[in-house]
Image (cartoon, rainbow, N blue to C red; front, side):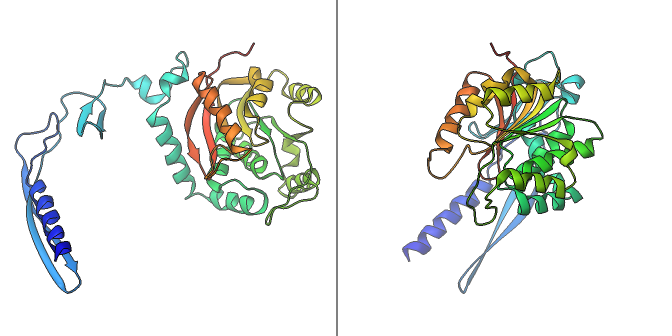
Length: 319
């Protein structure tokens, strides 16, 4: 009986709230009422509630951007956007001013759109064969490689999943872009992608997917002087338009090694930033990325897959 009384009181409060009129700013005063019927079936009891709902037609007085503030419980109207602001980011302004909800939503929308294109099934196969990354992350690697200006630098290629996704993006861009992958080699125990020789399997996989001629493979640890020298020689005068960082926990170290070669607005895909439990890789990785964001060097745009951070380089020159 107590449960039934509680349900009745909740139902009464819900119906009472439907009788309230919540006008939108700049909407018409005249509302169009209509009846809504709510049907609730619990066990063998059927109850029907009819309530009147009034809807106002929104009539904006000027061009603007409307947003709903959940904390304030009201709609607000922003400053009108110019056509230049709507169509493209002003290259003279820092990305910190341009990035925001629209940029994050745009990336989410693009991932959703790619799921309906043939490349999605292609990347699903790549993921199953060669990658521990989520397929959504491979989609973004493909997307960034396709649209970025400049070279692509991958630190921690493993057996080639993200490398192949980036190569496919370059292929579909119709442009020539340098794709440089750093991998020190070694062995990994894994039930799906275990390997006794990472470099051997990486080269085989790149050849199997017919992208080996698109990739400059630098064998060695990313922070070693000889590796840094080889990468700089391969880049030449080109800047990096996409960084894929999936090596060890020292994210800040690798950013410091190559940051002076990052283009303004360089896309960043950094793995191992989140996990259910703290561990020796995720904890320092996340601390490094959080510090870079706090210093104004990185602009966060979201988390994808299981633990991958996505953002952009803000472009302050390294010393």
